[in-house]
Amino acid sequence: MDFSTLQSRISSAPYIPPHRTQIHPRIHPFSSLNSKPASNTFFTREKCWIFLALLILVTFVVYLFSIARGVHFSSKFTAGRAKGYGIIIDAGDSGSRVHVFEFLTDGDIPFVSFNGKGSDSVKSREGLSAYASDPKNAGGSLVSLLQFAKKKIPVKEWATTKLQLMVTTGLEKVDPEGKRVILESCRQVLRSSGFLFKDEWAAVTTGRDEGIYAWVAANYALGTLGGDPWKTIGVVELGGTSLQVTFVPREPPPLEFSRVVKLGGTTYNLYSHSLLHFGQDAVWALLHEAHNSVLKFSSGSGKDTLMNPCIPRGYFHSSDVPLSSNSRSVSAKKLLEFPTGNFSACVSDTLMLLGKVTGKCMKPPCRTGSIVIPEFQGKYFSAQDFFYTSKFFGLVPRASLSELVSAGHHYCEEDWNKLKNEHSGMDEEDLLQFCFSSAYVVALLHNGLGIPMDVKRIGFANQAGNVPLDWTLGAFIQQIAMEAEPGPEIPIWAMGKDSFTFFTFFVIFFLAVIFAFFISKWQKPQVKTVYDLEKGRYIITRIPR
Image (cartoon, rainbow, N blue to C red; front, top):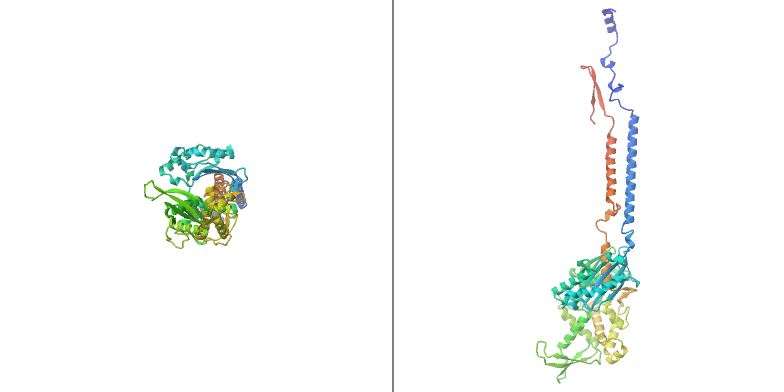
């Protein structure tokens, strides 16, 4: 074929652009950009999301298992009924008493057993103050008490049984250095006892704390602890050297007498006041000193007669007293104590004495001298010497003050010899004080606390059922309850107390989510294909997302 013929054919044929004669790169069988079908891409994404859902489900199941395990092994679930023991030694002026408590940690407030098998107490004859001249041997007085405790507690429980020494009265008469040596001597004995003990667990307990512990014990025994604060029972505890008053007032008490106590999930704003020198023995001694300093009648025969309204009629007592308290002369005159047995006069003398002891009222309203006590409402218990006085007159468990007044009048005006015959088995010194003690109870409760004379809302008791109303019981309950309170680590138990295991699964879950996120974003790159006429080829470029 000649050139002219070929040229005519080319000119007569339709024009085809060069790029039409090339195979597009995207459909070239050997192209690296040849993508898979869209259905395969969808299938891959679907499997990825199924895998992610399964991973989330497994992690969530493990988390639920961790929570269930934490609840099962938490103290509220398994250890809630754990049995335990505790020891408190009450070191008072007249002797030391050891209290062994057997308890179950049942809920927020422990259950203390008083079935005669576990919880018990025994007292030694000598107090720590008796070792003022020999303080290094004071700890020896506790050995017999510890031996008693060891008989009550199984050997396997000794190492976990908390041992405390609470010193109440008596050591205030000892100089600071002697007090320090006495406490250190006791700590040495307690360290080697085999029980759980720390040095700070042997210390002096204030009268105010003693009153709060007595309040806790009384409300625990009566079942009012952990409930409505207005339904709790107030406690007036009369000891030998001091008086403790503790109750929940209607109005906020003065800050110096306020104490916040949290028990059983309830917060109590208590009024608590310890009145030193208001104990029955202390006031009895002060009353005798006051009578000795003021002779109410003189016979002019070298013998002075002391008129004492707080002693039953017919009692006779004589003693030699110095002519002057400031005189060093050994000469003395005979003092005859002439009892008048007058209940009303005894109450007046007692109130006058208390007013002198407390001084003038600086922050009205005051009830006795300078004592500030809020209005007392509701019911309350009177323990210790209050109980013994009311029991002697047959006024337990509950009586009005007017009944005690009537009994006091009869007793004070009765002949002493007749009283001795009626109570022949009682010590005469104790028998002598009941005229005074009945008058003192009325003076404190009516004039001091404002209790009406004819209202029977005062209970005289030293135990409720088989539970003793002893302040050491309250101290033990409060400390066990405080130790059982949840701390800041509470959220940890929700992870089964195995934070490392839960953290591991959490990390796996987090990484799975990140992995799934990038998988979901991954897909075939988007490209744009153009034909370069100058170069005569296709150019493929990636389109940014």
